Length: 241
Length: 333
View (tube, one colour):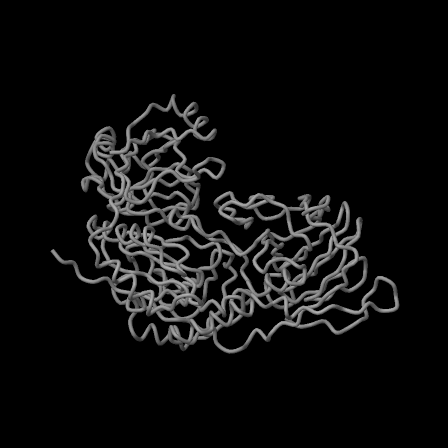
């Protein structure tokens, strides 16, 4: 089955986006990550960095080494290939304290969905999510695959500060917000896991294309796990398929 | 820093002052933004004067007054960027020149008269531990060295010791240019109505006081979206001009988020980012669209200008008064 050719969009004089579509769709995201993997395996001189997102690959480059038209042609040729290196399937199991002070919107999400809070937690922990991208803030992990019955629109009044480690729902997306930040998402819970920790090696744990599943833990376990995470433990389990 | 470092103390400082270099590359795929100097031309000028590589770390001084004292050793510093009055023990210090600060002396910077950011380059550099190759402060990410946050009074920085035999130097900068800030349209200009794209280019925008290193908000007529203001998030670059739901443009700058969910009508060209970033709150800007080829020619010229900044540096002849420079008119940024 052939897919439509991606579009090349200039992002100023030193970056271009290879856009595969404009929706949240696992197949589209797979094509983004396949191009990203091919570019990593067969580097193009002048390309400094690439940023995969839901639907496009942003490629930063030096126009003194390669110009827009030449780079665009090379990227389109790579995007047309079907031999991208297979990526390791990695699955993370992420502990979450749901509800209460850890997730102040759990009740409201449950009420809106016509479910008991425990059932929202069951549905949120019941599936594996695809990591579509990391962006906005360091370690902010955007996940797709949310049970539609608990999808919840973003708040009309975004909160000016939400805590580090927040697990939230924004529309049909869910995600891990590693740092304290403003947010319009609905806060379900909190994880002690640091997807970003500048004093740990590696600084980042989760990659685009990984799978993430959540499991509920008691609030009584928070302090010990939070301390371990701050000391550099991953806290979440990772398995490679 | 081969010899014992000198110690530079922060006495007074406004809120927007931090150590910045050419920025942090390589981790945008994890959501870690580049940060780095808002005005790369002035950073390169300060560094060329101080004998440092063009993208080395300097102190980016915000628009308010600041003062620094050398507590130990001596330091040769350079000042570039925003136009402001600077004094060292009562003597005038000129923009785009070096000056040696002896132990106990205080460099006083008045608020910026025009422009926003000044750069204090240091001979021998600023000591710190790079993360992803950079000392740049990114406050939200908790990164930056020696302090992972903007500078505060009482902060101490290990800096290179002045090379005592070195003559003072000055740099002659090219004119920053006038006229509209040049942009390349896209990547999502089609998310606005054609009338809104024309209005964007025809309007004289005012820079909002609610602007910072993350981005400058622009005030003017409301720009209309063709089909709603949400897009599925994609990547951003320095200079991306987002149009959020309120129809008022937001130009993303050094501390921007790496991805965003609003359409981007255009991107400021690299060569014009310094001039845009140096426009004060309340200042007015216009935009003009140019083609990608012309923008890339400009980017190549801009990179060459930064790389050859040291060729613009010349030594100063000391005046008969020992240790003092002959008076001269301050250069205008």
